[in-house]
Length: 419
Ligand code: ATP
Ligand code: MG
Image 1 (tube, protein in one colour):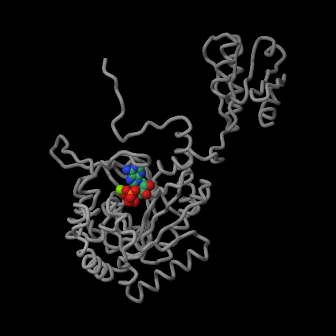
Image 2 (image 1 turned 120 degrees about the vertical axis):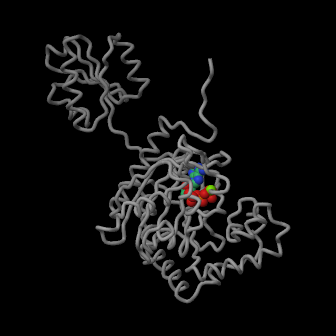
Image 3 (image 1 turned 60 degrees about the horizontal axis):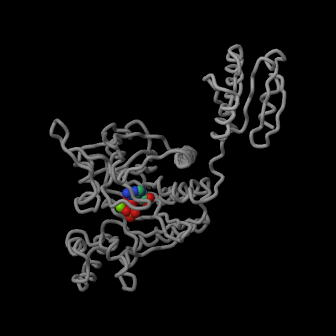
């Protein structure tokens, strides 16, 4: 018989990791709701062209990382590599701006797919949580998305993070920067990796993001995007920094920062957190983008958004003793005779109404195997309900952590569990 194993770069998530992942998503959603965002869900696959247009023909995602296939109708389909394109497509297709004032604020979560070389924190199917603010050119909205991330990280108890920021300014500034970078890099052409030799021609800014040539650039005096900003864009970038400072957000200006997708203009940022060994993980990134809605046949709206990598956040939380998984009390009910079953159900209902985790033993088992089950599954309490207890209209509650035992009337069960 064949043995089935999961595909390279995919994950099975269960037990502690599952609790953490669920908690991360719950916190991301709760905090975003507080900021006035609404949930949006878009398809896991889209027409390939959506991504080639939006991410940029020359981006790593499009050239190397997409899961693209022909469906049975011979249409080219791609599993979404990122969230923004799908959300903007949905906003334009459904004219979500028709009945509402701008900006629109949406959040999403789900699986994303990139054909990458798998390693710690890098998978072929991974989870992201993201938000998009559609129809804003205010830098206050840019800042607010960073404040939203800060609130999420605070609730996750991940406080040692740094936000790296940079700004490309408007399209004119960006064009200037692109030319300047190209002129600068051309003299090192032969020392760059093969990918970058090509990038230098088609999209020079991408060279700065190259993971192969990264070290080569460390000591070089590369022109900065800031040096190409016009007065207004400089002023905006400084204002952003003032606001972040005022809100006590830990940030640095990173002149080397570029993002992997073509659509960003203006402020861009990444969130970095180090693991126990001091290895930095980029847990999220985002920025301002002003051309995408138009490019996808919508109105001329500028936007800002970010994506957080749930799996990388989960890795960092797993290695910490953390308080974010607050488990409700768990109770195992042991009906020892046929007559006890209905009473067991009534008690279970009462305790579940109080948000406890309650499992009723439905199989006929010996008392000792029931207790074995309770201890292996780490229940907090066992409630024993045998003939004696039924007669007395009471139950026996055993605290499995302290091994204290109490004979308790039905009315007192909830209070005894609460402690
Ligand atoms: P990187 O530089 O690490 O490749 P990226 O710029 O490609 O990141 P984004 O497109 O900004 O990543 O995605 C946002 C976040 O999603 C990343 O910061 C990261 O936390 C997460 N992410 C991206 N790709 C993967 C992947 N293959 N596996 C797990 N998480 C990922
Ligand atoms: Mg990448």
